[in-house]
Image 1 (cartoon, rainbow, N blue to C red):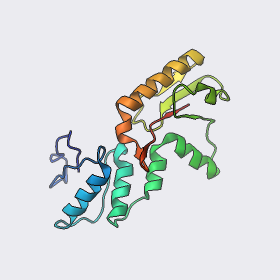
Image 2: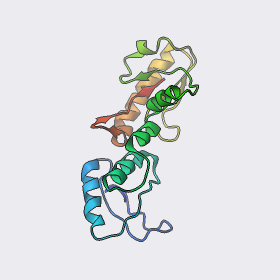
Image 3: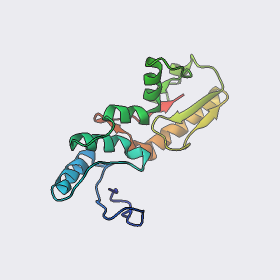
Image 4: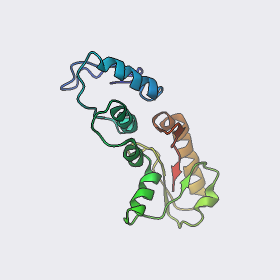
Length: 169
């Protein structure tokens, strides 16, 4: 499965066919399209090669009755703030952190001590990860991450009808 803006991955080992679906832009329509495709094709499971498609893959597997991780687990793996909440609730030690749904809410992170690491909750690789040694750098880093969220990551950050592209400090 590949999104319409990308070429079919037909040169990858093991790929014999490719289905073009808008998994990021129209996730439910993509699941419906996969259901229609499945009527004439055998499908034993779904696997994602892309981190940003993990939530959609879990939702699609669930909708088709295929094995896989639950959508809630997939979301917890993709949203770095949610992941830390779940780890902490499970008894793991996690660094102190604050989720900022708006980069203007810096006062919510006042309980944290510098230097701070700022990153997008739904980032990929190390995109947007910044060290902020002081309040001015924190303000800049949060604005930069918010821009990355808006320009790039929001497309890959849907959950339960909303977006989880935020800033974690």
